[in-house]
View 1 (cartoon, rainbow, N blue to C red):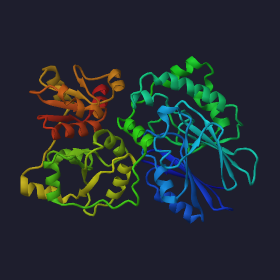
View 2 (cartoon, rainbow, N blue to C red; view 1 turned 60 degrees about the horizontal axis):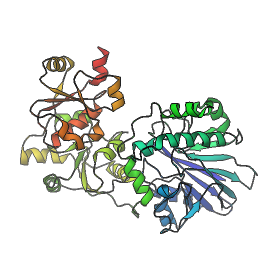
View 3 (cartoon, helix red, strand yellow; view 1 turned 90 degrees about the horizontal axis):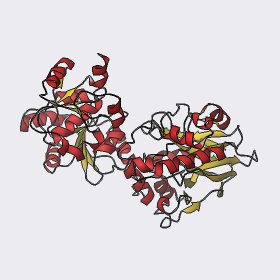
View 4 (cartoon, rainbow, N blue to C red; view 1 turned 30 degrees about the vertical axis):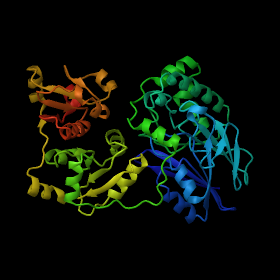
Amino acid sequence: MFFRRRYDEQLAQASYLLGCPATGEALVVDPNRDVEPYLRMAEAEGLRVTHVTETHIHADFVSGARELAHRAGARLLLSDAGGDEWRYRYADVDGAEPLRDGSTFGVGALQIRALHTPGHTPEHLSFLVTDTAAATEPMGALTGDFVFVGDVGRPDLLERAAHMAGTMETGARQLFRSLQRFATLPDFLQLWPGHGAGSACGKALGGVPQSTLGYERRFNWAFGIQDEDEFVRAVLAGQPDPPRYFGQMKQINRDGPRILGKSALAARLGFRELEAALEARRPVVDTRPALEFALGAVPGTLNIPANRSFTTWAGSLLPYDRDFLLIVRDDAGTGVQELARQLAGIGLDRLAGYVGPEVFDAWVAARGPLDAIPTVERRELAEAAAANSITALDVRSPAEWSAGHLPDALNIPLGDLERRLDEIPRGRPIVVYCQSGGRAGMAAALLRAHGVPEVSVYGGGFGEWNAK
């Protein structure tokens, strides 16, 4: 059996290619939208992708299952275990084969058996893998977002991200029962999860790429709770706020992602195209670090730094129904194609092009000074707050806010800021803060882009404020 894990660091997401060298057939499980690497990986091993499936309807990235099956001419196999609400809407159109609890299919000498493991989502499947050329029992399970190393998939996303009221507790109880059933399998079973540390699909995921059921039964907190009500309380407590775009991903993946075909390179544009985009009020995203942006930026642009949180905030701050542009910091546009790949991976595939740093000099020559965002120090902020002469805007999550905040501050999380602009008082300076400064910088740029005057940033954030 050939087995290869592909890991996307940006998404903290794992997908898998399993192959039978004797027949040349291969299966890909949970592919993301960039399908070229799977095709290249299979070809390099003398395999062809003949089967494509996924564990569930994903919330954190656009699935590549439809795209890959289309490109490779492969059999597409999709869960039909979630009921009408969570049945793939494009399955019949694409001729997908339905999978339910106990369904089996072969990939050469590999036998794959589906287990219905609801909880994270109603339709979730895990896959038991048996290499029949060498064994009569499964060697491992592809667990998707069901069992992670050290954690389990969160059951609250349908309610908190897809706004399906009343589904959190139901999902938690389903998850408990799925775990009880899964725990009866052999301890030697290897577990290959769909995410690692850094994913928002759980609250305490481990960084180790795989585990065994025996190890998880001993050390994963979720297997240690035998009372259902206690488990429900524990699994729902302390879950992080889901990124705002998760609901959008659920809909895209359920209804059917648009087939892209071979990706075209992002186009390099010039100053005139930048001016036209701003005049048409299309989003323009400056991807430089927040400190560089604050020192001088093209007026009206947003700031989403190209770091590990890039896709999280792009998915939360950019519209899915309009074209947008990027500003990159290097002359050659190195890395912009990777940014385009990451954006397409969460459904933001309307990138109209990018401009380089030469636009800053061009802007100054044609339009005048760049826009700077001032910062304030702790003492200055404390004096202004005491005099009630500013509005302190806290853009952290409600959970962070509840744990402590500046006196009389207004709390609007960054992901909600654009749709709640009318809640921000006018006629007095706005000082934006978060925990350590990163989100505050993005929020200040968004406010300035929407014409809110007198915006500054408290760079030290609540972490600094609370430490003194």
